[in-house]
Image (cartoon, rainbow, N blue to C red; front, side, top):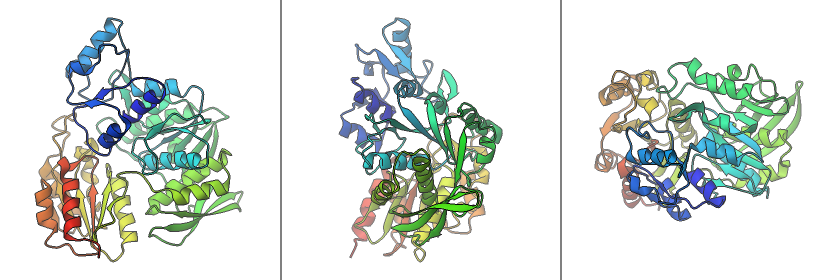
Amino acid sequence: MSAVAKLLRDSGWQVSGSDQGFYPPVSDFLTREGLPCATPHAPKNIPADTSLIVIGKHAKLTPEHNPEVRRAFELQAQGKARIASYPDILNELTQRTENIVVAGSYGKSTTTTLIAWTLAHSGADPSYFIGAIPVDFQANAHKGAGRYFVLEGDEYPSANWDSSPKFLHYNASIVVLTSCEHDHFNEFPTEADYLAPYQELVRRMSAENLLVACADGKMVDRAISEAKCRVVTYSGGDNPTADWFVSEAHSAEAPQRFLIQRREAGAITRSIAITTQLLGEHNRQNIVGCVATLLESDALAVPQIQAALSAFRGIRRRLELKSEESSVSLYEDLSSSRPKAVAALHALRQSHPASRIYAIFQPHTFSFRSRQALEWYPGMFAEADAVLVFSPPELRGLASGEMLSHDEIIASIRAGNPIPVHVVRNAEDILDTLLPVLKAGDVAAFMTSGGMEGAISATISRIVQEFPRQ
């Protein structure tokens, strides 16, 4: 929603908004961009001269549950304002551009940002819409003058009144598909339910379109089986089925150096040396997806891509190093599903092989709270030395029989991970647990899609104070 607000402002609209609550990095972005956001929701938040009201997809954003939404629908009934979902807005904004839509259960924010950054760094001035805050961009959205519009595509329903997947509205001419691993159990109870939106996205692509699909991604082969457009595949390793792949990886630490190659009819036709500040095998995969997309579409030349990728510093809350002033390495990661959490810890273990890794984890999303997530927890923290489990929020939207209790989550983590498991409820609990055992060279990783009720910044400040870099 913050990105859509920025795009509307770039298009000449006067924009304000509201939310029940918000926190960094989005709150910092809104303040920096001068986009006012009131809290909490209330009818008075809607200016008298409003002509367009964009409403997000949240279980409580209905006239029955939210007085501000109720007022919005009253204004629409009176002919004074139009209500739209943010996919509706993106549909309108992508009518005259060549649209690169990045979709998948993980990796899409980083891959979207990589493609947009590489185009921007090379002077192409793309438009972009990213569901995260990039380090290198001023904002997570921009309406450019170039031919390309790069969008992070979400499979989730568009609005409470529109069940169609968001990414079907984005007029895709190029699709990058990273993975179709089952997620969002509250909305997609079965794997088939989750796969269906991706299959529909692929079916809608015409012969002149391009589909760039990750050969490593779970269920991607099923998603693309009915494709009528040109399909190229990629891998973050040496997957023999992939057209684009990594043949040599020289370092797991930053900077990573590796070789990307193109295979055609069994022969190697291109070899491209890459240097990146990003950590982990999962980011090698994201980078190969970016390179394959830009070269297969003839958008840029190899030297432009190499220069941009070597300068790229990542996005906020994706294994983001939070302080270079501490002898303890402090990271924050938006670990909103098992695959993302496992990939983050694997990257940290590769880059810090001799360090003790403390995972501070909050099961924040609906998926982590769903009863189906019990199978996610065993082995999830295999590459950590201890895990601190922060109390989950009081999420609503799942029936009582579908939702895990805090005690069930703790029991599943303890049963499936033979490491110390601590229960923490605030910054004081985290510090009481960590400070007696931390030492220089250790790693602490905050893993949540939420804010841990302010505990992240408070904990980091204290650890930096106690463990300054010598």
